[in-house]
Image (tube, rainbow, N blue to C red; front, side, top):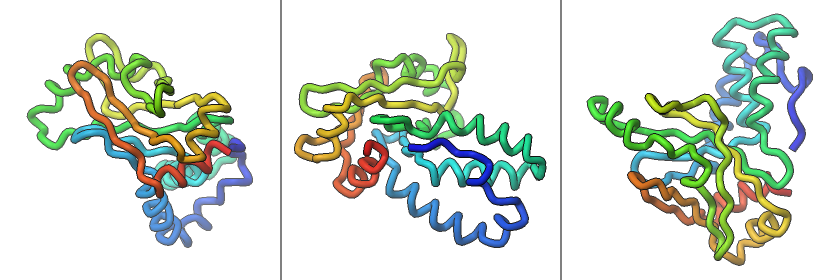
Length: 193
């Protein structure tokens, strides 16, 4: 999937005119690309369109008009676009009870260790590579960026749909799994071609 550049981002004035329509389109797209994993975690798989939306919204919120600053935002978000044979996601830890946020985040420390979140397809495991700097021994962020690097063989198997693709959390304090539905799998397969 190609990375973004300045020509992919429209000026704030033009974006504002079509923002509602674009936002509705992206909300629908993200719904197709969202995978709940148990009660407290979900992953939204990113692609060019979802990242363009994030950049456009950031430019809008920050009132960015300068091409250099726009390019800085593009450079920052380009890392979230999946590379060849890769899925890229934003992982959200969603805790409804405010009084339990600290306790649950403390229990989930280490979920970003590279072995706890993965895709299972038959005997194959595709482990998530988490972006660093989002947690420490003292705290865990509720938002993480994670990439799943598939081998060419694994990508073909995912696309073919012959073997169930199951997203798994194998953290000692959070065990959950979700088999991808056919519509979600078909949507995510577009990222692997």
